[in-house]
Length: 295
Image (cartoon, rainbow, N blue to C red; front, side, top):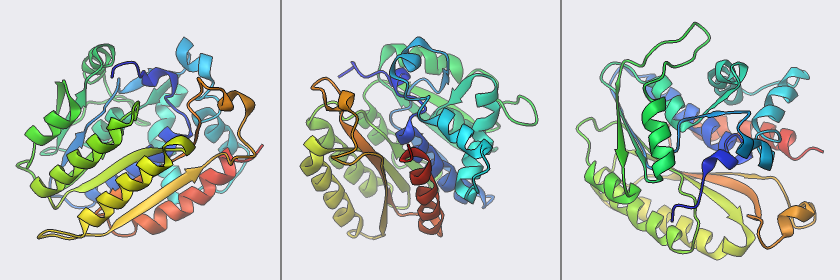
């Protein structure tokens, strides 16, 4: 389905959880000089204007990335993983922009690293193709990445399968579909199981929404992927990091309407997590909870 547009949701609490985790994983990969491959299966446009009418309509950036920066200005002590993400995001934020996962991934590329960005939505694909040719924004001025960045249009899961195994076998698969319908959960499960078969040394980072009406599908997907990660020639562990924003009694009235998404939080499942990611994200989640569940 192509009805989902991330421009309405960019910079919300779910995006921040995903990007904090992404930065922590990329920091781990970048500690070694060996090159890596990054595959982003649902890339989106890459960067967003914070004054976009769609973002202003939902107010999700206001209660997300803008609230995070305003909270830090109030003097809150910031965990290392949160500070790292904010250092990456700050130059964009100061320019009235918001950096999505493709922009963050481009910032980490070094000579020899490879980034594959896949997007199916025609409008988002066009924006992505344009945005990857824009200069990156950093605290020390604009620059271009040194690694190779390739954009792919079409079905995310077929493209993922066609790219595996990559020539450079250190790396990450980031998967964050829209979960617009029930079949998405099964598609994600099969696609990532296939990815593990073809590229069993990869870190796999899967974002998922916490939805009361889809709790069974979510639980089945996570359980199946966790069990599958323990099989094969290179079994590995998994970690789950969840940020719950609302409970049944604290959900705003507008979120209870039939047309509302009903997303009360979100999570990241990390297959083959890098060393110390759990410790770093546990501290980060405590901080994010204090920011986004307060008031």
